[in-house]
Figure (cartoon, rainbow, N blue to C red):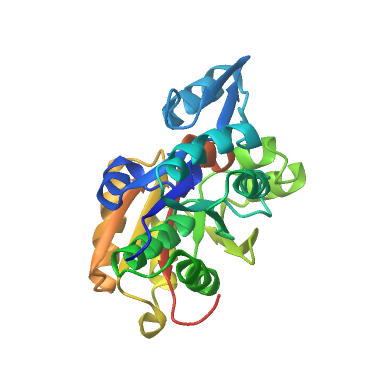
Amino acid sequence: MSENIVITSDSTTDLGTALQERYHITTLPLGIVLGDKLYFDGVDITPADIYAHHDKTGELPKTNATNIDDAVQFFKPFVDAGKTVIHFTISSEMSSNYNNARLAAEMVGNVFVVDSRNLSTGGGLLVLAAADMVEQGLPAAEIVQKINELAPYVDASFVIDSLEYLHKGGRCSALAMLGANLMKLKPCIQVKNGVMGVSKKYRGKYPIVLEQYVREQLADIDNVNLDRVFITHAGCDDEIVQNIVALVKEIAPFKEVFVTTASATVSSHCGKDTLRVLFIRKSQI
């Protein structure tokens, strides 16, 4: 008899309600402090709330990793019901979420915690891959092993229209921000080995830059797993998003093209007008 496995993740995987329901994914929200109040990602705060607060006050929120006690309370009902949990977190290089979840798992038992080595739907791709394996009847330990082997093949990058949020969040120097603004640069951030780094700097108007970015990302189509692709954005105009969706479909015959919105946690760091195209390659990144 196969294990009764449940897939869970923290709120940074950006799958959205429809995909969470389709694949039976339950999420554990990160905390977000905005002003003097604590909110929970996807529960009582949205990216739009963050953008509005920033526009009004110039302040960015602070994001809080899920603490050990909350993780224990999240895992326990599943385990008490006889389920085995496979839980995904944002890269351990970016947050203490993984370590806290791991410690909670040790206390509860029967919980596997996966460090996605990624963020946003880069982790979401691994979550859906694990859900597919559950449907195939694979045992939890084998799923975790296969997912850890798959993680280096996830191509996760995004293009930012403005460095303001990264600068205020301490991830970009004032000099770099000034230079980028003066030269009208749009940096492409690539996640590799669990950390973010600038892979390229584009110049020009944002919609044109995004088209160039997509064409370059999908140029080596023979090296792309065509099962699914995510187009995940933070606060982009719908026309821009739909143009990118059409372009992706024109270039590559993905079986599924998912469009999702970045969570409040991810949006707190990247800011408005950020767009990602994320998929799995056939060779490691």
